[in-house]
Each structure stands twice: as C-alpha cells, then as structure tokens.
Length: 240
Image (cartoon, rainbow, N blue to C red):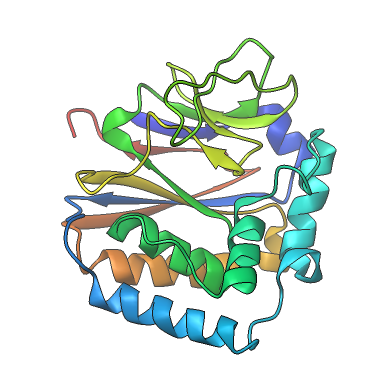
C-alpha cells in the first residue's frame, strides 16, 4: 500500500492543516478537453475585464499561506505559494498556461477556488510520500530543469518519497521526475489549506469540482483527507 503521510512535527506546527488527496486511475490524458478549456477561457475573460479579485495577499487564504511559509523560513514573496503565483499570472496577463489536460484541470480549480493544487504521476513515485521538514541533505531537480540539482534548506516543508524531494517550499515548485504528462494514467492530485476552519469550505468546493471533472476522463476517482489528527492514508493498493 502506497501511503501519503504528514510528519508529526509538521502537524504540530500547522495543526489546522488539511490536505485532500484525489487519486485518478485510468486517466485519459491526451487530446483536448472542451469542458476544461471553456471554463479556462471564461476565467481568462473575467481576468482580462478586471473582474477577478484576490490576487496576492489581498486574498485571506493566500495571506494564510504566506504566514505558513514564513513560519518554516521561506520568504513567500520570493518563493510564492503555488496559488499565489498562479493567480498573479492570471491577473497580470489575463491568461493561464496550457500544459496538458490533467495540469490544465487542476490549474483551473486552483485559480477558480483560490486553493493550492498540484499533482504527481504515481507511476514515477517510489514508496510512500511524506510531507516533512527537509534536513538539508536532500536533492531536488526542479520541473523543467532536468540538469539542475538544488538542496532544500533545513526546516523547509517538502513532499518527499524514497528517491528524493517531490516539491520545495511545501507547494511552491514540483520536481521534474514526478511531473504529470499526457501519458500519465495514475495521478495523485493535492488540494491544501493550513487553516481548515477558515478555508475548509473552499477546499471542499475545489475537491468537488476536481472530482467532477476527473470523472469524465478516469476509470476511478477516490478522495482521502489528511488532517493533523488523521495524518496518513493509503492511497494506492499493492499491485495497482
């Protein structure tokens, strides 16, 4: 059983955390996705018309993430939480990137709901995934930079498996090894908050929206919720 778990010291530091782990199996990642594209276009039209608020620290959920980043020693204005960077890009350019159907789908949900979202190709993951603090000995190869190796700072919150670091600064940047591509068929999507009481409703809405969309292209979709009081879940059965 592949497990997703939050380390005890991360739970202690962020007792109001909530992570919704959405596993899509048998995902069809090729071609166009009209339902996602039409919603992206509508969101971009609203951004271009100046109708979208809440970019940057004006958004209370993004402000909560900035506070969390500072708590583990990261400057959130230099290495921004993923939803902050995405919404700033949308506000600035009126556009969101088009990568592939799976990535476009979670970018749509993240930008629409104001919730950090990311994904890993589970077929590229080795062993369990743990959200923990870096000890300073790990290596990280950023998405899109296969020749680059970085060392996360001690105390920085990371996702990691048996082979290395999967994200830096919690959700700031993903690793190249586990990136989601058009050929990814078994995908772990992650939707997060550090303040479940304040923003759990937004996470629930994001999860519902993501599951609804993924159901159009997946053989099966399951959801696992992690909190500080329930910090681990089996996300993939043996032999799956």
